[in-house]
Image (cartoon, rainbow, N blue to C red):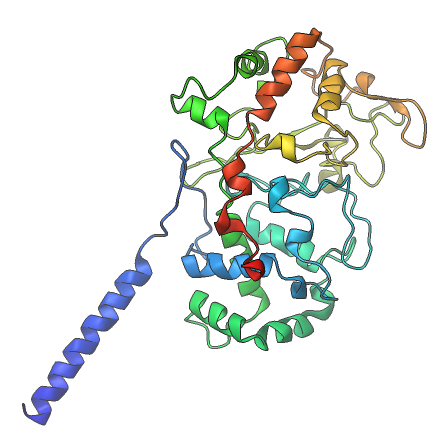
Length: 378
């Protein structure tokens, strides 16, 4: 073969290899979705990839991501608790009190907004900025020592490989934007869809106990009326998927407080009002999903209700009366609460049935999924 022919052959082979590589790069991410689950919404500037997900899994569990290297995302979101933490409210890496409860993360890929009451945090990428960089309250505190945190990652040979694999187009891929993108990608894989309730919906009539079936009728019936706010596949009116044209954003006041008799909530937890200054938004918080709800106690935006039984008491009373202390007031008469939060009665069997249904939303495969585990313990 002449040198010219050899050059032409080499060029052709290289072109084929490059074309193949580009085609592989363009392959869509292979979602592993339960039956009936739509593909989640993903921002155009952060397409999913296995490499980003794996990098995000490492970052999620790495305490070096906090300014003082003492706390990770997983510190407040533990897998065995459906990625909640069993605390009323958490503390940040430097001891700052965080005023809101750490919510479970099951199916966060499908939420229309993030955190308890912020209407503008509409992607997981935006949400990640809050614990990473916010200073009031300070959570992970990455922003206060950003270069130090990034240098820790650059000095780790494993992260050099993970970042390069996840962001091969970047000359220096270890920077804050890619940290955020990887974390968001990993969280989008926290899909829970194999609870007894899911299996019942998929046609297994034996998946639910008789008590859970009776409880389901109450949940979706007009006596308890839970379904008005806890609707859809994840039992929340906050929903968005890839094909959603107009995302559903739902914030509700449930009569948890009424500190002045006019509807006021504690000053550090006023809900949507904090962002809109609209008096009608006082005490309105995002309706939480109920997936794995039996694992995510305590409940409400401030963790002030300890058990599912107590939550049921709260709703049966049509709100909560706080009889003493700085937050004293009768939430049952809160003029701003959703009118569907009104008293109703259940006998002991019906209470047990409704709790049985809520417990049927527990997906043990999710909390034991090896793909979501701490990679540093493998």
